Length: 427
Ligand code: RNT
Ligand code: ZN
Image (cartoon, rainbow, N blue to C red; front, side):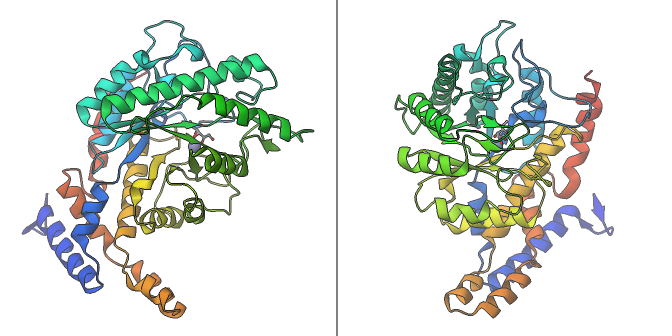
């Protein structure tokens, strides 16, 4: 594409990046170090954005468990092949090397009814091969919802020992699948346990289900797995649809569990009071936990799982990941499901925003922290405000070019073409 007749798109990106590099250098920021650091941070793309959390089991209905997907944009992936092709289409628009996060219900069961307590790595063989060919890591989640044995909203903390045992077995198997991913791909799989368990109305006994949950989790995690293959995470939640009054796996429950059992805590941006930000929690929990998992999401008034946009919240989360000094301690996953827009665009928007926010954090002028260290909070505020106007977008465009992915909104056209030719034809 020609701009102003003389300079090509590439030349103008290059020029803008050069000016940005000078401007940042003047502030003591090394742009090349920032983009090289960014290229080493993987984001785990949640496969469930591609098919509205439906999965490939033969038997069960909509997700349930308080999860609600809204929208009717055409083109949902209906088969593993379609979902992988759609993920390929998104990944081609995202700079860097990333990961894909699967749920147990995305196994390939060849038309057979394989219940959750019978799944194994063999049902994920095609996913492993697909990931291996592309150099992707895989992460995993047991699916403790969308199942008759979760119909009353309780799983691992159920008052019925038989139902608890069913979900314990499912979660044990999920860890084994995670370990198989990690061993096959040479990068540890983070296997994250989220359960919907909670009370619609005021419980008479909050302690007993929590005691049952702790005991069930101890059984799930009883077998040690090599941390090079599998890392266990657990995900608290404040409330869900149908569990408004009390969730068994609350923030305090899991924080205590993680510290005492050495597990990864998963902080989902939508799982707290609407005015709370997970950004502020990162430095606190990481005093006590070597590694954590994030589910980066965007709540709109509630845990609505909207596409991640370039908000102050997101920038604050990204900043905390970078400020701790070793971003590999934070496993970054996305978690949202929007069925009202092109699903591949939804992945691309959210992932590119996460990366762009990390870039902004990596480009932060050191003088901001220096001012604070000197107790000069006026200067800190001035510099924080000035930093908002620095030319990070020029660096981002340059990074996209370096990584061989479209610049700016240019990624939309190929995805629209894919929609015309592929997803839009699905019925
Ligand atoms: C639910 C949790 C959980 C799910 C996914 C599908 O509130 O956020 O992480 O969104 O496991
Ligand atoms: Zn989540």
